[in-house]
Length: 70
Image (cartoon, rainbow, N blue to C red; front, side, top):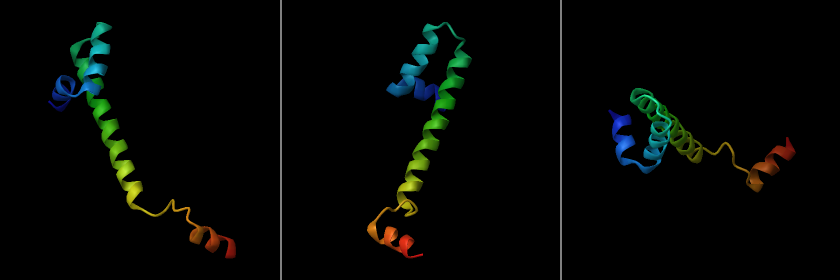
C-alpha cells in the first residue's frame, strides 16, 4: 500500500513509476520497484541522520593534534 500511495502522490516515485509504465512493464513490477526505492531512500535517510549525530568523522584540529602525539 505504501508503494501505491508513493507512486500516486510523491513526484520522485511517480516519475520512476511512469518510466516503468512507459516500458509496458506489468503493474506489479512497477509497484515492486517503487517499494524497493522507498526502502533504499529510507535507509539513506537513516544513514545520514545517524552519521550526523556521531563525532566519528570529526576532523577538527584537536583530533588531528591528539593523533600526532600518539
